[in-house]
Amino acid sequence: MRVVLAEDLFLLRDGLVRMLQAFGFEIAAAVESGPELTQALAELKPDVAVVDVRLPPTHTDEGLQCALAARAARPGLPVLVLSQHVEQLYARELLADGNGGIGYLLKDRVFDAEQFIDAVRRVAGGGTAMDPQVIQQLLSRRAADDRPLAGLTPRELEVLELMAQGRSNAGIAAQLVVTERAIAKHTSNIFAKLGLEVSDDDNRRVLAVIAYLDRDR
Image 1 (cartoon, rainbow, N blue to C red):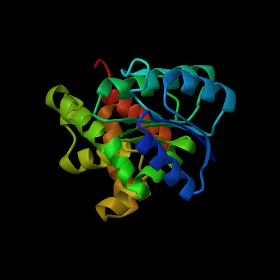
Image 2: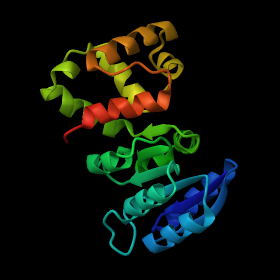
Image 3: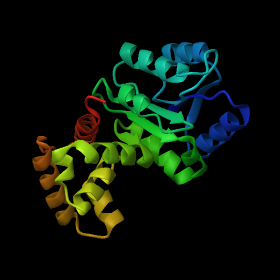
Image 4: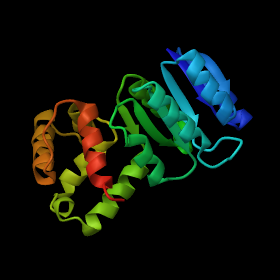
């Protein structure tokens, strides 16, 4: 699986390259700026891009905007965005086109090799990998003023958070140490209360839930 990596800090970039290679990924390019990223994505057509939000020359959201432009040119291009802090606006922009193959992780997560590699693989496979802290903030903001979300039970909120991270029913069941059948029931209740169509497609249901939670924000 071919990866284009964009990170301006040399030590972190080198560490990510070594980690990805250790888990069998091929590094098509490891770049440090927005223009280099744009060129690499256009010319190399990787299987997945791992991109720092803030890249030279602007050091604002250069990496994200380059990735979004590349997805516009090549719909469905898998992109995993790394950020130093929780920025809900970035998550919204990444999710806006409604396609899968997207992820948003805090940089702290990359120090957990298993979690980071799982996120890269999930995104490369067309799924989603949203940082738990982003999901928690979205949930907390919606719960304060949204009646349907406030109507969820504590267990349903727990299931919704794990669902929005990209976990399947089986994965949620394992995390909460309950049966998959119980999770299926909770999932049905959640979608009914949120007014969303039930779907067995993990990626579509995650996008639908996050879009619902973050609408009009």
